[in-house]
Length: 153
Image (cartoon, rainbow, N blue to C red):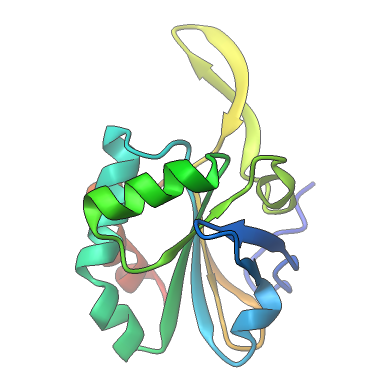
């Protein structure tokens, strides 16, 4: 049974961004956060999602939100992804999958009938008090900003 529900306290996390700087949920106390989990840097769906959030980043800031992406890719991979697509937000490297597991974004997937473990694309909207305001488990990668705006207070 999932503990991650709208209205629940978001799990604390600590991880390193693309530059090796530690980032934690506590860094966003008093701020709203869009925390999104994605499978792999530079893949079509992940690029579409990151670029949609990039293209709307100024609007998110004006609404008082920070944006953070999390994947199991390395810091170097994140550096390349950020440089290639001019991403204005941090990406956390969760190679040990601790944050992915805490946010139930690591689990069984299926492709061509074969089951395997992998990243479950999810987004959490967390308010300034650290409470989950919304959870997106069916992410529209090309229009994720619109999806979040349509379904979040």
